[in-house]
Image (cartoon, rainbow, N blue to C red):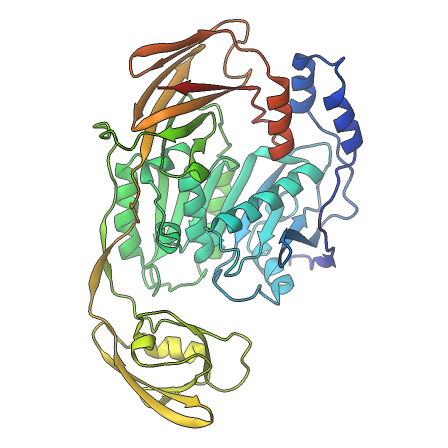
Amino acid sequence: MKKVMIIIFIFLVSSLLMGTDSLNDIINDSSISNDSLFVLLANWNTYLPADSTGVFLQKENVINDTLIAPYFIHIPQNYDHTKPTQLLVYLHGGVGRKDFIEDFSEYVPQITALFPDEVINNWFFLFPQGNQYTMWWDLIGMENIKIQMRDLKENYNIDDDKIYMTGFSDGGSASFHFALTDPNMFAAFYPLNGFIAVGSRVTQKPAYLPNLRNRHSRAINTDEDGLYPSADMRLLMELSLQAGADLLYKEYWGIGHDFAYAEEDVPIMVQDMKNQARDIFSSEIYWESSMPEFNRCDWLEITKLDTLESPAEWQKEYNIKMKNKRIQFGFYHDETFEGKGVKVRDLIEASTADSMDLKKDDIVIKMDGKDLENIEKLTELKTFKKRGDEVSLTVLREDKEVKLFGRFPEVDFYDAFILNKPSGAVKAKYWGNHFEIETSRVDELAIYIHPDMVNLKNPVTININGNEVFNEHIEIYREFMVENFQKNFDRKALWVNRIVLKL
């Protein structure tokens, strides 16, 4: 029987690493050579022992004057502050909710309890909380997660190369989105009952399947999932493999949109994590981007596009038409409403609910004449509907019963990904001190340098599209190295210089 963890609430705006003054002293000490400073930072290991272990801590990230994002961390029982420790980031579902989850302190122990004792007792867990203002795929939401990770890495001895992301439903979709757009801090991704294109569709911004080549992913879907059935995901997983993704895909049948397979699969997932470590020095990178926010993977960065050019033959578009069979009314319910029925919090424009003249603050009490006690009953009744069916709702509006009539839209087709911007792509590889690069619709790029990649005693040579564009010795650029370390607190990705190349 798993130990009941103590919940400790610590509200934190910012925290300082023990030895920060010492770190600043070292960084500002001009008597320390650049080479020595690199060694000191790359091997930084000055951490305090944890005040308590085997506990959950609640913290907060202040995003702005009106938005504070709470989150939980779990400090493992066997944490040794002198040794780098694995970290698992778990993202919950239902991220579009109005408010943060109220009973989150009860939720997080339930998730950790799904994992083997060896993980609970030896790995850190990070549980961000999201809502409609910090959705996992919005820039604010993504940055919120990364700030929380940085806070952990600054205060605890986290293994930079053994950080994993997983999550269920929206959390699974977000795991895919990070893998597609911003994988740099992670070793691998484990989406559970998610949909790979959600981030692109919700933000109306592109995501590119070939980017899955750069990190390992292991995804799971179920056949009776009413939101993201495996029959739909299977098509996109096949397309991902055609794009070169490092992907394992698994299905469980006879299960709906729930984590009923956890007991069987979590140990397998954990074993897969143990076999994955981040390799920021991979000898080959393919990266495609149309946005400056998602322009970098490890040592390669696309700094400027040339979208007037035609794409290279090897830059292919990966997309697919999906059949839209989902039954949705198109309104958000008020989760705080405690009466009988379902209270409308907000409506989606041009939705079925909108066309029926459903209004904000209506309380839906019947569907097709059948009583509704709560949102779960409405969800159940929807399962008996299909696209094109007529539907009726009875609502309480200003204490009067009003009956509304409508029809769900017919089956239609949509693009899985929103590829509405021209993109540029780079294929890059290196060996020895030589980089060989091919570009497509790129005007400028940058190469990040690390002493573990190249021998700084020898010149670095770079060919782009068959032409030598660089042949020089590279030195450690102290200010760049320090800024990079302070921003990311990543001891392994301690880049010492950046070569910018105009094509």
